[in-house]
Image (cartoon, rainbow, N blue to C red; front, side, top):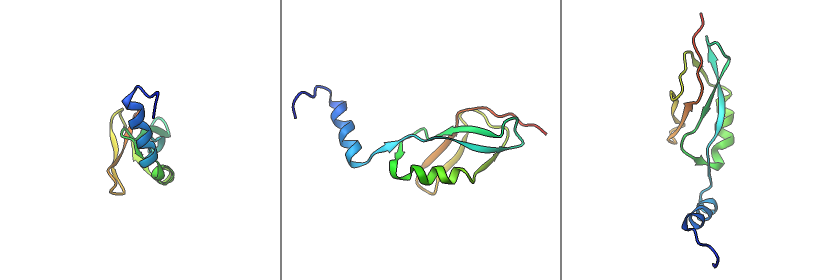
Length: 94
């Protein structure tokens, strides 16, 4: 290869070819909250091939209010070490 000056670029391309990873931003349903949904994301990039599977599963998950930014709502999705963390606030209403 010629012309590549940044080692990070080469590492990125190798990663993309061998094991592409992405962060998934999505939402979860909330029970007893002032909002019906809370935004969440996977703070660590996950294998790209699992994105649609996780997105499908999130449609079935409902969490209880209150929810705070940074709350880990799913600790270990399907035993794969993938976390879902809240990126929004939902207060509890009775």
